[in-house]
Amino acid sequence: MRLMTVGRPGRVVRKIILNGTGLLVFAVAVFPVFWMASTAFKPNTEIFSTTPKPLPLDPTLEHFDFVLNGRIAEVSFWEYFRNSALLAVVTVLVSSLLALTAATAVARFRFRFRTTFLIMLIVVQMVPLEALVIPLFLDLKSLNLLNSLGGLALVYIGFAVPFAIWMLRGFVAAVPRELEEAAAIDGAGPVRTFFTVLLPLVAPGLVATSIFSFITAWNEFIFAYTFLNDQDKYTLPIMLQFFFGRSGNAWGPIMAASTLLTIPVIAFFLLVQRRMVSGLTAGAVKG
Image 1 (cartoon, rainbow, N blue to C red):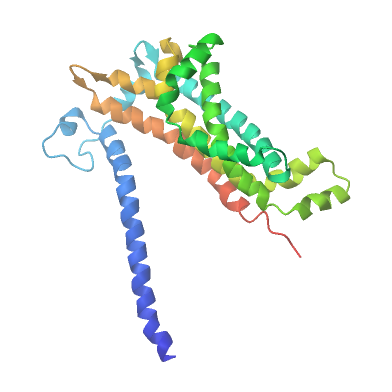
Image 2 (cartoon, rainbow, N blue to C red; image 1 turned 90 degrees about the horizontal axis):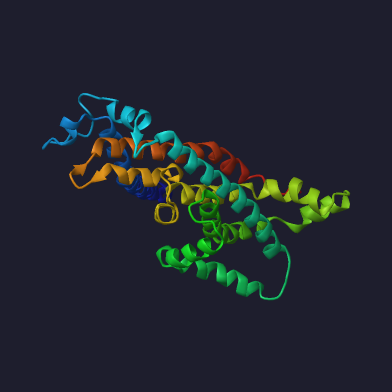
């Protein structure tokens, strides 16, 4: 009893230190986002003030109104938004489908060069994306896919699939084969077993990879700026560069547009995070 009493203060102190460290890391990570959103509501006099304040003293929506209702480089905000949303949705759906089928094959079947294939998935992630700009530019040009959202979507899907396969392989391998065998005994075919048994159990991994794919397509700038020529096909990250100029930077609209650019990512995560958490217990096998 005495040992337990003596040990409890140590556990309390350790818990306090761990919680304090976690809060500190959270504050450091969130502060730039907080400052961005706060600056978006500040008038120009407060943005360029020599004594910056964390919160706007006289909040305004003029920067959001300029971004949402104005025409940036003769194109409205909603056209940029439509292009980014279309690319993100296509990337998530296609990469998730391809990665899930490939991960199932890798985790469930034995074939030649299986290990080599898995190693190549890791090697692909080590290649700097900037080194692929010129080769991909030439490939898309030869396929007549330059200056098209379809060609850009193919590039994003190609980047998202290897990472998604590697992640989903672990989720598929963790599903007991006995569940699939039981479904087969009950008369379920391969397709029905895949959709009714395997798919619900790997849903957490599918959600995690979809978040990565969404962020990859939503925030990408270099390839979109290189492969697209028409302004009406530009995405939201490209739109931001129009606020930077030789005469100065429009920090109010920059922060407002950045805040609007961040909202869909947060909304997408909140939309799927419940499925991610609930799915973690979906694979329990009842005895």
